[in-house]
Image (cartoon, rainbow, N blue to C red; front, side, top):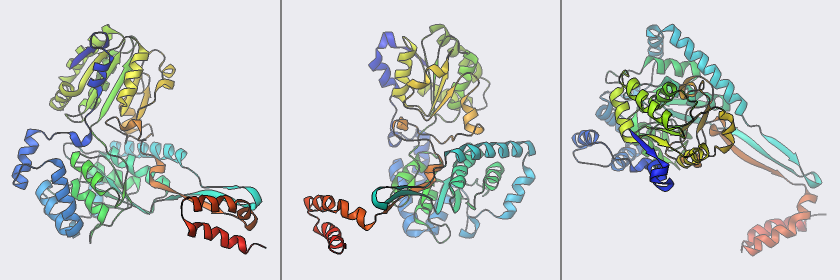
Length: 449
């Protein structure tokens, strides 16, 4: 893991170190490329693979979904086997640890309450001569939630995607998750979905799941919006289907950036870096500090804690590739660099963290103080953990209740109100060469008593 000093390298050089590859610029590692050559018979890019899958599912429906579920996940399904049955839910509860289920229920309630406070309201206002303007906030009819599988299962992702949709009032929520080779899903993923209120779960993953939700098949219904994180193939598939349905965001690898001063505990700081590094080899873990002694202590503590992690090989590769401790000249410079990075998760571990909050401009979520570690937000506090990555916090927002709603404008003018503004509208329409627009106003003017 690199330790860099702004004073030695300069601010511009440090900023370049903080630049992130766009999600579609990430190169597949050699192992995955070799596997893809074996599967597809040629060395395809991630974009080429996704384009192939999405087009096949669009035009061949269930047949293509079956093909790619068998090819990529090793599960040989018929369409009738995609849907999770009530028996599978019951089996999940039978094998689950009751304490974990109870913790899931508490988390669901915390997330529900937080998102309930976000819920926007429709409104009406009255203007001159009895005219009415307003906005109607309407939930989507059907949304699709994607929950990743692979090296780990994430019931927390189920909770974070489903609860804001439920609070918004979405009529139907379906979920897609990749099955294991025996055709099953993680029991806690199933339980989280059941407790959160998912209407149907389909055992389909990857780009084929995204395409199936976007276009619909004989078995899988078409949705209005797709949300949820996934690997590079899932993200590229979401990009490919955007316009046929809406999506939440284009997400990349997990990130944490910690702004720390001399009062920060190096044990906590190292632990929080590793909390993201263990996600995957492309994850990013960065500390910005104005204290060199803390930098040295954190570096040593990371090595100590890393050796004890079950996923230490993944975390180690992540830190070697994207782990950095950057020594800044002061905390204001640290905040400048933090905003430049626009991280998914920003922790502020300083003597007075709230004093730096007004300087935060670009971050998915901000964690203030030693007792607000990033995993608190991942699992339990209530705010959503589906956050913008790859620097997109400059313009994307965290997943929220409004993600699952749309706004419709309301306009109602009286005869007198229209008469008062008609000449302005006619002038503007004729200036644009749209005579029929102008006529729609003029004809009403001719009939005004």
